[in-house]
Structure formats: C-alpha cells, structure tokens
Image (cartoon, rainbow, N blue to C red; front, side, top):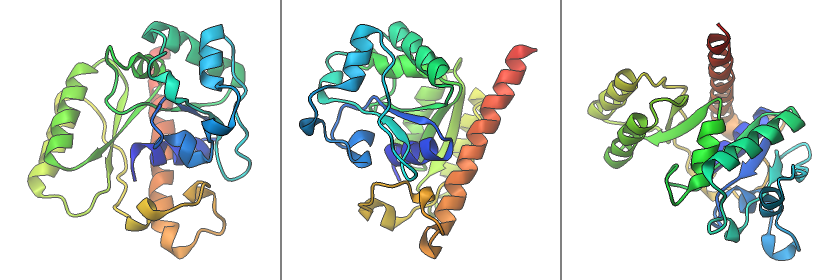
Length: 235
C-alpha cells in the first residue's frame, strides 16, 4: 500500500478532489484510469500556466474526482509560493478538501510543487514503513519540516522489531509529530487492478474489511488533526 493508493482512498473517503502532482506513470492518474496519451489537453499544466481553476474529472460513486498530472509537469513546475496560492484558490472555490499526491522525495529545489503543497496543507500525511532506511529518511524529514503539520502513518506493518518501533516513537517525541493509525501489510493490494477505491465497494468483502477499517481510521485521524489545528490557530 504505497502513498498513491493511500491518497486515492483518503480522497474518496473525505469526498475530496485528488490532485496528482506525480508526473511518473505509476502515479494516481494512471491508477485512476486516466491516460494522458488519449487527451488533447493537460488540465494541471493549463490551470497552473493560466492561473485558472481546473474542472476536476468526475470519479462517479467509486473514485474521487481528479485533477490529473502529466509527464511534462516535472520540467514545468511553477515556484512553490505560486503553487501554494493556486491550491488555496482551488480549495476555496470547490469548498472541498484537496488530497495531493506529490512526486516521491518531498519538497526541494527539484520538486517545488511538493514544497508548495506542503505549505498549503492542513495535514501532511507521511506513510512510513518500519525499516531502517525509511526511518532515517523520516527523521530527516521531521527535522527539516518542523513547522509543518506532519502526521505519521505506519504503513505495511507486519512484525517490526522492537528497536524500530522504539525509533519511531523517539522521532515522534523528539519532533512532536503525532503517529496516527497504522495500516497493515496486504499482498492482494499490490496485485489489485480495479480502478475504484477499495473503501467504495459495498458491501465490503470479508477480505477487504480489515483494510477498510484501517484506512477509515486514518481518514478520521486526518479530520481530527486538521480540526484541532484550526481551533488552536483561532485561539
């Protein structure tokens, strides 16, 4: 269950718009069923280039609405401040949550759209696998992004050694980053070819039920974190 699948599920559960900033073919747009090769326009590029609010593609009852990415986005990203401003305009116009799937690697000079998305976010969901290298990367991210509302989601959790669990707890306490509900490891998710959100299927098949419960708990944690942050900011 990678970050893109989590973004797809959260966007559907939150009745939000899925905005795809990942220009690779393995991103949310392709998983949603969008193929840029069959389209004559590039909604994300057109909107950003012309300061327009795009019209999301309708996902119907089983997928979130989508602003799709394009392979040319990687080399044509605006600066981060501009991206932040545009995302805030889109959210205000649509009056809906935005769930943004960024390109891997976080925000840096080579990926200003990720930096812009982080700056605009009420919650930055950070899925983390409890392994040595991902935890090292998480510690660096938590240090670098101290001022932003990170929410750690342990992902693909199986039987992690105690020392890795303790490491995650230490990162959380050191940088005051909350840890949300965890998501287990499900082999069937990596083989799944259906475009619809797993949580959208009713009735929920027995095989999916545990995962749907987990991702629903994550969605609730995102809402609670955002609401708490807004209340604290208003005080």
